[in-house]
Image 1 (cartoon, rainbow, N blue to C red):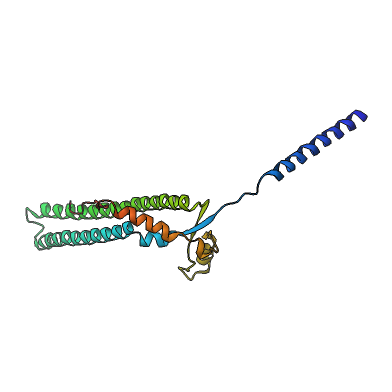
Image 2 (spheres, rainbow, N blue to C red; image 1 turned 90 degrees about the horizontal axis):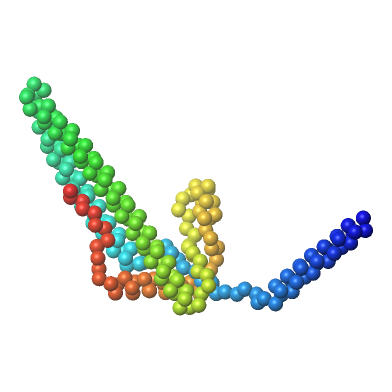
Length: 210
């Protein structure tokens, strides 16, 4: 019993000394410090010249798609009018009817593929633009000696459904950031400067007329 008590006392002493050592060691370490800033990613996206050019290219492609869809529909309507005037006993009726069905199916498939491709292109470029924002933010952080850059956004309810408003509130990560630590303008300036210094290339390369 005495041996057990002595062992317990020794263990307690060792633990006390160990934790005391840790406290002493931590006490000698300097308190962590850092410089923090914030960026408004949505604003940067909207004002970045590449994003503006991408939106314009997408608008043009959507117009071309609409025009091509109308042309194809007009062609299908013409063939449908011919078929509707034909007698089922006409030797060419079956052939024309099958041509109409084939045209309608091809038109639908073409529209689905074109729209899906445009959507994918937009998603790919949105990812690339965000990656460019990350690189520019890192460069600005290095320039100003920043240790942490946080996502800043203005709170603007997009729906009057209480549940959706609460979800939007929960999704926010920064409640307040002083304007003096906002480096959005510096990041945007660096992005536009880099983009405009490069040769202008078309981003969306979808061939609408196939």
